[in-house]
Length: 383
Image (cartoon, rainbow, N blue to C red; front, side, top):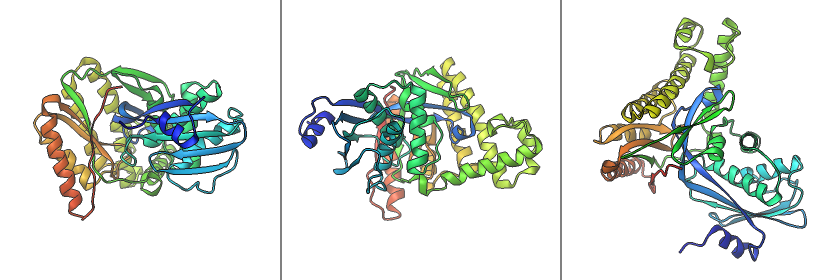
């Protein structure tokens, strides 16, 4: 039997007396992509994969961090930047710890171990789960007060300042506020959240890892954010009342289309349409009309592929294969794109056949480039 995170902590640091465990899940976004940083709407749900952070305060200012899954250890003094800050996992853990130290909420060193089973680089918010688990562990260990929204904002700021990813707030809110049996509708302008019942009945949400992984800081993600800012600047010259792309209606975008270069018009078209799809998706979920919800998922993929241009040939092939499979109601890329996962709405009886076809698709597409890949099929738990 695999040792627990607390047992692994004891093996590394001698014992686990006084240790606190913070746990945060990954998430899959059902619909609403690249709308978060445009102050729009998103609809994520948590999955049955999570990150755990085991934290124990020390009596000095020494910080000992351990990534159990990598077998990597980092040590430094509280308030100082570690030499290994460029390692993939260190900026997220250090960033949360340092920000809480700067706020006067963490005043001593810690022994801290992180581990988890959220696939990295797959668009399932492993970084948000890591940040949130560390923040929750530190909150439990030091006993400070911080509400869920403030914690999500702190974790988002860590992404910006320490990891170089200009993400929105969706991932952190979903990881912090996810609830069993529900999706989470987030208004990214106000940060208002509403739990939307997700009664799947004989359906399952199935996530397929394409095996095409990417690091957001090194992709076109930040380019798309810049393009959205450029589009907003152009539109505000015509109508200063437009505060964000969220304020655009389809009619308004059509009226101002001539003012935008073709690439910026396409980006806006996706954002405007996607916000409408999210709100319509919530209505369908509340009505229990899951086939209609699935149709919206596929429409979102087409928009991400053609207008926002963040898909990938392997993702497109996975979606096409899914939509050709009996029992699949909807399929789309999920996450920022450029690789990662697809999310699929599949009848339970069709899951084995769908999984077989998806695995064959991933292996065939990746083998064509002579790249070894371990494909993952995750049946998402509704948490």
